[in-house]
Length: 123
Length: 168
Image (cartoon, rainbow over all chains, first blue to last red; front, side, top):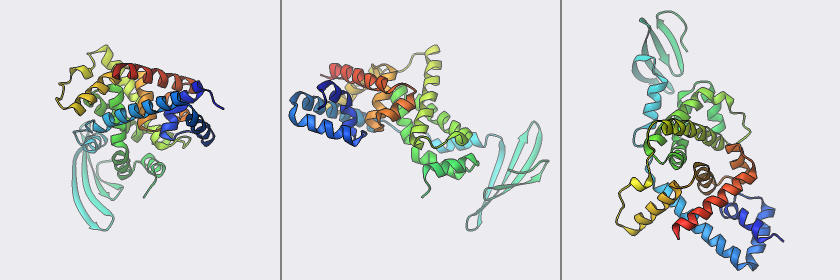
């Protein structure tokens, strides 16, 4: 039989179900006969409800997260022209880069990038 | 549908579409956790941005020892801590008390909870969020925060005690 102290330290995880089955069983057994721990459990459940409601009510990002990330990933691109889709699963575009004054261009086909202007290989 | 772990494998290979999917899947979760830690939507957005950039650059480091969500929240926690340290050195952090109260009782209750949570030490706020909102186990929380399991239970106990005092 678990003591009240040990039961109470596990109650938040008993409430969320994030606990081993054996411990959950022992707590359930204890709560059947202990009014004080049952009251504590109800209090924790109320607190969790208020906390999760507060978090749920929070505003999610106002700016488009993906657009900002996308800009950061392509920070070295001076220009990218999306030429659209001409076959299923194949996206074609041209990216122009300007690194330290040396302009280079890539032809993108899907995830592949082929250097069409300047030195070096595409990604 | 690809699993999170499969997406990370592709991200390690610089697959932007996989990255976009992962951001779409977990962006809100990371933002809400960051908001619990920073208490500022502006800072939370910054944490989200930095977390996802760290994932883009470091997807190879995911070894599958934890769930992807736990790994992401761990990165977000580190980013939030770094940002908060920088902010503490610079300007004042926002207080929940600065908000204009809403006259409806439910909204007023929500402001009370926000104030009480905001008054908790950061270490207690993060445990509260990970346990109550993310439903992490004691072990997962301890691993994510890099502290013993007993510390997780103790922080949870103190957070609950302080909130009960503030909200009754």
